[in-house]
Length: 263
Image (cartoon, rainbow, N blue to C red; front, side, top):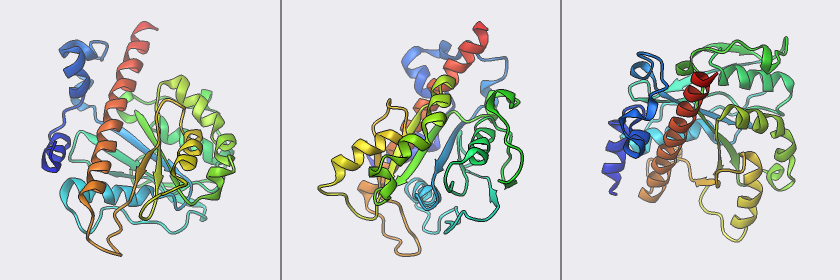
């Protein structure tokens, strides 16, 4: 498929169209009346500070729309006490939800992550990380159209925590909870130019950031402050990843609708 056709496929995407192509128009029969009309696939971007989440938003904007400026402000630090939730690509049937990076995934950050997952935080909201930690079973669940449907977890290929297996321990509770909920985690490894002999090692350890169901995706991000050139192969990789996330988001949405219908 040409790059232009890949772009058009995402630009013209209608919620549920990938699963409907596979299972027919009845793929979302468990949806509530009118639910699918307002539904957009919500893709959460998570990761530690400096892992490339905001740069990925700009990479999508460049790959999808040939935007040389980027939509996201890349944060150099997430150490301050508040963070800002930002949503991108309002005009399409998918959205990307970006936050500043986590520092150590302590309990207050876990609580924040799940508040985002369950749609309790809104676009542009300042979030104070210090304060009461709310357990997941006490969190009020919003409608499915406000919750996240799939998560991308970003790590830098040069992050020493990757090969030290620190992520495996830090992410264990998050992975377990999202797995039970039916939300797939896609591991995304960002790198400056290329990964050579260490690629297999990085790939093995990157699996620890996901739930074991998805192979890591390797992405070179678009950095407009350095250059407006962005190789077509990089753009194709970005668009393929977005499409994969949407497909997995549809699967999660359908499964959660069916589970709600049963119970």
